[in-house]
Image: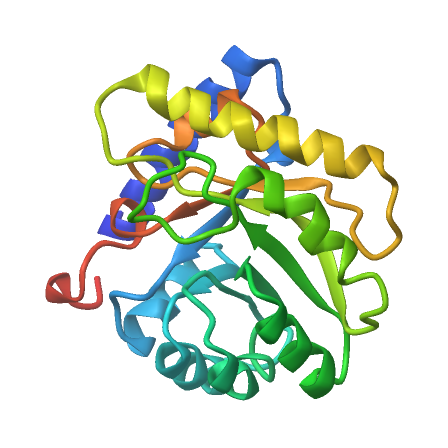
Length: 231
C-alpha cells in the first residue's frame, strides 16, 4: 500500500467516525483533495487512489493541471483568492469556485463564463482581521445583488476556522457559518440554492463534519508532499 492509499484509509476512517458521531451518512461529505503542493505527476497518483474532486489555490497550478487531465475525468475546485484579472484563466478549468467575495469578480465570471459556474461565497465567520471573506451581515445583501447573473450559481458558503487548539472557537466558527447557510437556503433563491457548506481542513475536518460540512478541503494530510515522490 502506497502512502496516498494509506492516508486515504486513515482519513476515511476518521470521516466515517465523525459522521457516525453526527448521525450523518458518509455520502453527505465530499472530500476535496487539495493538490496545490504537488506536481501534475503526483496528482495522477491522487486520482488513481479514487479522488476526482481536486482543489487548487493558484491560477497557474489550475491551468497546468486542468490542461493535463481530460475534461470530465476530474472536477476542479478553485479554493484560493480570486482576482478579477485572473478570472479569465480560472473559469475554463474550474467547475467550482470556493472563494467568491466581491462583485467585481462576480461580474467577470458572468461576462466570461460560457456555462454556469457553481460558487461558494467566502465568509469571515471568525471575524479575524487576517482572514478574507465577507462579514456575516454582508452575505445576504451580496448574494441578492447576484440575482440577475445567469452564469453564476451560489451553491453554498465557505469559511476557514482560526488556527487554534481551542475546539470551542473552531466549533463556534463552523456553527456561525451553518446558521447563515440555513438562513440563505430558506430564502429559496433560484440563483442561490445555498445547500452546501465548504469548511474544514486537515486539522479540523472532524469538527466541521460534526457541525454540518458538506465539503472538506484536505491537503498535505492526504496527498503528502512533493518530496515523497511518486509512490
